[in-house]
Image (cartoon, rainbow, N blue to C red; front, side):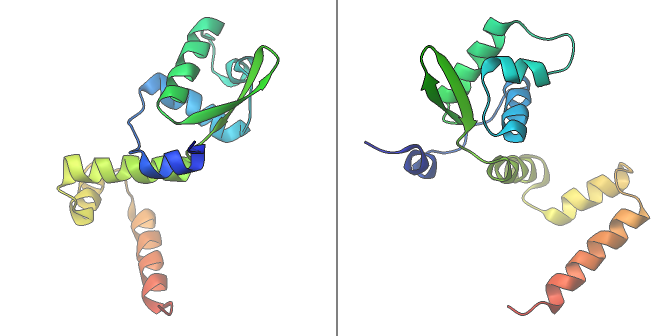
Length: 135
């Protein structure tokens, strides 16, 4: 039988709905949680217990989370890290909207005024540090 780690390697990461992503944000923050713990971290108005429980089961089916049973209660934990999903989401954004061009994406954010000069300066510093670092 394949363990969750091996399943994660061979499975393609699926996209999350807004509700699923909200639950995953909580699980990434808490690392392990029961449904009640997740609900406690969600903004008001709090969703119903059954709604959160259903979303969590969907996330488990999609391979995002696993659980440990404590009698009838289940404690859930992420199988995919926030960094892994961030990489997936960024690659999808870059591919679907910017023809895989970081330059095009950067240009878009500048034109939309999502980056100011101090942000651009910080990016240039990062680039220069990467250039100077030994390979």
